[in-house]
Length: 154
Image 1 (cartoon, rainbow, N blue to C red):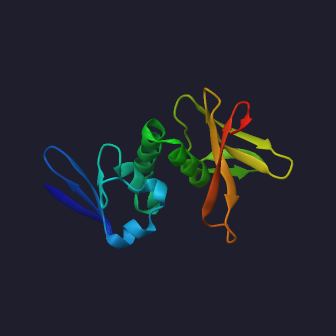
Image 2 (cartoon, rainbow, N blue to C red; image 1 turned 45 degrees about the horizontal axis):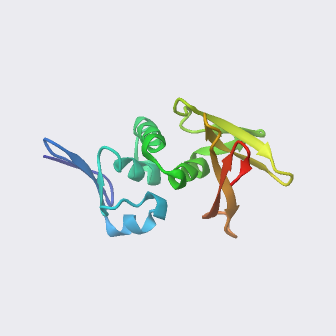
């Protein structure tokens, strides 16, 4: 068995057969709802650990963040993909860019001007895309998400 503290309140535990990440109550409180696992405060290593890495990216390596990003694309629902669009896609010089710098196969960045502002995010090869829509007053917490399709908003 191995136990490694990543930082205060984030502990990685491994066994001969499995492992995961444990979060302190304080860290759990800071998690956005979309990143909460059904097994709080534990996050299973195969899929759910990616949620911790995405939430507390500053404490993990670039390689771990890339793994988490790709895992979230593979296993994530629309709300999680919208979270990724908000936190990992930004607009630079009127063009969308993503960090980490790769999107999984079958996804592409997009942007369009809705008459008021430029909206940006990513979409899959079926035309379903994810981006932010509304922000709270201090511009720090997402209060609603737009889920776009090739035909327009849905």
